[in-house]
Length: 507
Ligand code: SF4
Figure 1 (cartoon, rainbow, N blue to C red):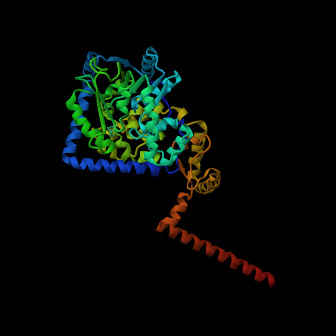
Figure 2: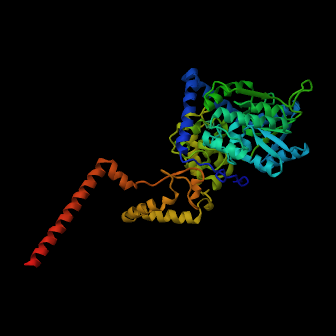
Figure 3: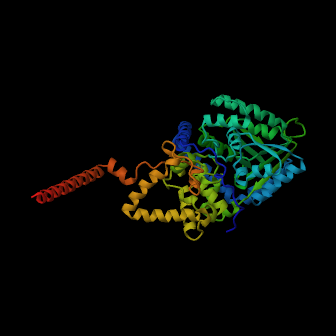
């Protein structure tokens, strides 16, 4: 299997792993699930299921005729005055965007939140080329300031608290901000407004591309999408080829599914439809429009009759919200742009099993994701298929588990099989953790154990399983009682024996 270039590891720069991460993630995802349920209830279950089936069918139909719809899209975008580019992989996509930027002597760019650009590491490429590139979605702006990647595909800064964001603004922007969402939002808005006006290039992705008219559909809640795509004189959109849909009828269905599942809204605050650059009769809007159609492994995914349904995804993020694994470890633990169940499916196929073969195993296979997925992707079947692929030979690269870690795993396995060693080991661990312990957490361990704590905190060792079992179960308590009785009898026996010996000696 052909693999793509080496990926960005989203764990590399994570600075802010709060010890309360699982609780914070659960609080946010529970809130989203609640609002989603309310708007789905309004539709009614029967109609919602019909909509889901319609979404699934039309996405699958498009995938099965992808060549036709992409050709139609190219024709329509060109007719509308846009310029279409085809990028086989991330490097080619970066190169195309850089060349466009150089041609127009761009020194400042603003961006709409786009998972495709995260996937190809576009920000890094632009910044390395000396182009100041600023994220304008509030969550993305925050994680960019923190020099981190998004931890959720819809809510990039889900892992940060308002106090953490206030500290970040103080450190990076030099402003004293109270930990109040409205105040923080106002600070970001003021900063970003200057940037919108100064930028020479606006970069976006798209939620959908309508083949019949060559129209891009961009769904946002902050209005930054419109600013990025209308204020700068140049608009470049980087979009995965899987985002094409046949017509407006299809978008009508998908726009009923996406905001409800993603943010629990009947519709998002801003839904923009962009067809080509500005018309000659208009004063506003970009003079030039470029569409970069990104493959980056998607045509390879199409080759598998089952796993290809991964490409039906509309990036709503609800599978992350219901996933027990995601809720426990957060998004950065997945290591790449996409996290949760969609990350486990998509990243594994985009990067290949030798790089990301551990991800399909990051699932309890409970199936909640598939039940919630608005386009009915058979997520569990796909994960099982990918697991089979890993087991069949595409092993996880040895570099994923460094030698010291493998040695520790072997030692652990031995200790688990010898009861007294296990008891001794757990007691020793309790002491060894003390220098790294903060309350009930181990937020930062030294190398090589920091691979874990780079993206999520580790709970401190308080009681080993045997200790817990002894304290918390009737059987354990009975055994403990028996043990104490036995010990008492033994001590009494020894004392009696000693008394007998002592009395005989005296005689
Ligand atoms: S796999 Fe389904 S639930 Fe998950 S992000 Fe994609 S569309 Fe949403």
